[in-house]
Length: 302
Image 1 (cartoon, one colour):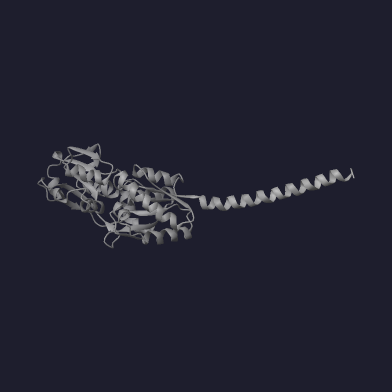
Image 2: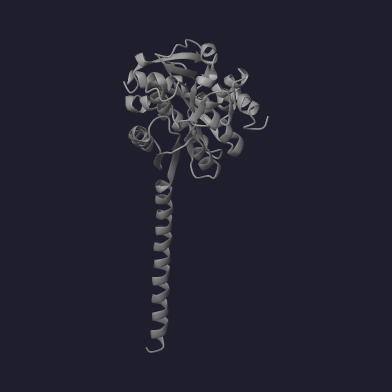
């Protein structure tokens, strides 16, 4: 009997190890499945309006997207436009809400792909406005530029399409602006956001400022800006709306889910955060005019 004891012990040990290995394999498989479910899909958003107001709307947006995807979703509002571009460039985010200019830069740097844009009264277009206080005598940009040395002018974020790029080109063409340090104005400042520009004009902290038309209209409609105190003296040609773009490695199934989800959004708080009335699909070719403007300014290579 003693000769069989070691064999029985070894046999038992082998059975225990085999069972443990099987359990570990099952646990690993389960962890792998759970890992897929726990994988986070990250979205970065430029600051269209003040940070607090954006975050409330983005919390709602995060919940809506999270329900439709088999992944955890996080939506973060970045403090400036360039931060979102760099986050996409360094693979820190899977999707981003860009301005047209920042999208063009991100596409050049990291291959970001536009898949969604917003609608304003059914149209995927907006304008750059130059606005001034109602008490100022100017009724047009030509009037404003008769004596630029008496004008304090404000842009928004330096990387904004409507708050900087497009009005900068117009003012360059008019011969009164080359850069923040080389211009004919009394002063030039960058406020950092569209709502800050609107309030600076309304409160007569600056004489005129460049702003996104859709956001300006939404600020007036919401009562955050008194429309009777501010007037528009210049409007650009149509600009294709702000894109939502995904990382270049995003699969088509995920893109389809995101497009369907955005197009179904009707929540007013989310829409108002972007001055939008809805969402529709977009593609890289929609931003060709912005690409040309960015190349003209030396922001990207032609």
